[in-house]
Image (cartoon, rainbow, N blue to C red; front, side):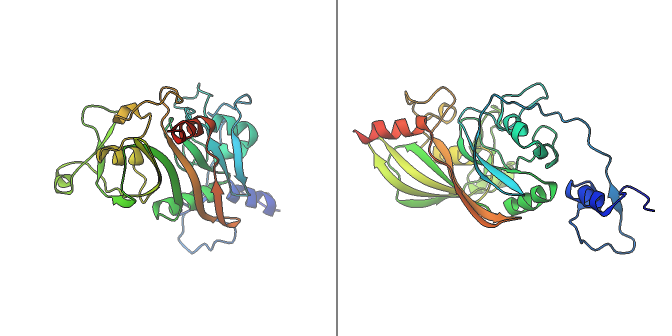
Length: 289
């Protein structure tokens, strides 16, 4: 007769896979060793989800395996809700298709969301389906083991290839904005190190199409770094970018076009997100000049 939380091995596996079993405060996988004196905890069954499922909002799935999924986030659609009453976000739409993501992460309103894209940014968004996958991928993010390649259209003509490595901090008077600091000033500010590698792909009249690879993951990093050197993104009014008729208010020309990483359940993965129509329309217009 079995006693305790799990009445069978199957139930025990389900407890572990759901992330409810921890050893010394850390989630474990099946087969993990437990030593004498270890603190083994089993969390209570989860309560009803704070995330509302949205069956009307359609989000394109680019990749799916047992551990995670990648979708093509549209511009101007938020990644996740800010309160339980919201339902017009990417995560709300995905909960309707993949309800398991609700319990994958550690924040009730974000589910298994592994990283964020600004509302005005489109492109590849990675979401974990299981708690263990969430933990593994968050570790990979912190270590810089997830390669992210953005396409960006900025104002002006830039060099062929360069790196921007100025620290980034919150604007002291505008909570919506970030600012850069010179290295000599960072010790007197809350600035955090940031690095962005830029390669020019194509020149247009008055603008440049870039491939941008952030080495760090600071808020607004690509936007503020390019603006700091006098080349703000097309459409990015917050950082002084010129308007484009094809882009709706709040939308700017920035797209996470490719992600590459080691999936916890499927080896090395490279996923590309197609350029959406509004961004492509800007390029088509510029190509005629």
